Image (cartoon, rainbow, N blue to C red):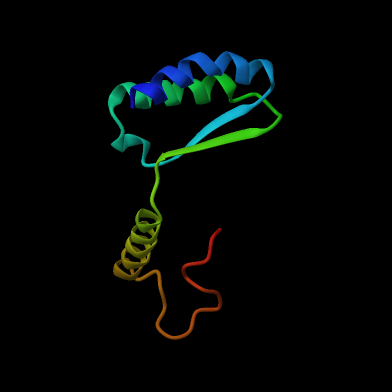
Length: 95
């Protein structure tokens, strides 16, 4: 994690100079607080850049996406927002 933290701190200026927007995806909240802070600061400092987008996935896993989707469907089902029978579109489709 130290390498991640120090690299973000060093490279944000270069990203800004090159009009690169920095993003982080995944479960950022699972990372140590210091890493979260650096990632968030990097994203904030490059948010207005309009060139390339550099996306980092330091705490990402496909299983978490599947679990989140299943939980969302279960919640809709409990709230009776899903009708019985065939759906006009897949309930798992991206919006």
